[in-house]
Length: 114
Length: 114
Image 1 (tube, rainbow over the protein chains, first blue to last red):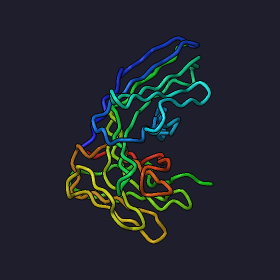
Image 2: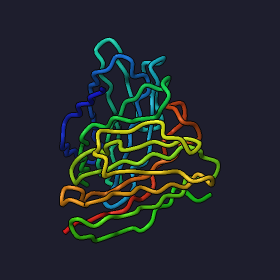
Image 3: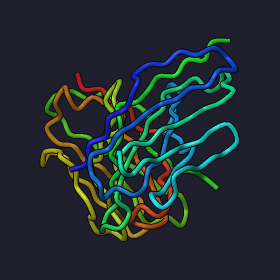
Image 4: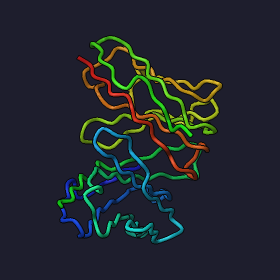
């Protein structure tokens, strides 16, 4: 089955700096890669996703890049703000099958220091 | 529109007991999935149901079961509870049964087994 590795497990940045979180996946059939943000005690919320037919996607201060050959994808947050502090999870799945099963990484605790 | 709703929010059970968790998907969503999130880890897939049929099952023992009702709500049942079943149980819904639509999570049920 799919295995997703996520690094780093913790990341501390100063407000205004950039943050990068990296994930690798094992199943070359995976073609959908969402990123979720989970604040303490709250639900995981989808913040951005990318499909394997594109290499990069951007939404304001957040961007995701995908390298299918290397089987890794990354989340980039620019001009970080204290409200970006949360746990971020990457996930992967194959969207062409008969079910919808996301395999998640173990998460990255991002702390943005004012 | 209401998001994915789960009940109860918190639950304390004793080893050996059974528990039933409930989930109502976003209106119009026909797929419901269940995930287990242990503290400090990413969510792990337990089940997916689409149009009342089981579409996928994760690597969980037979003590875990689920079903989906005609109104697309769902129940997760866990029998013979173990201490290791203590976790946040997340329900998620999507409009389709495959990964071509975003997966939306509820706030979860925090289960503590003593």
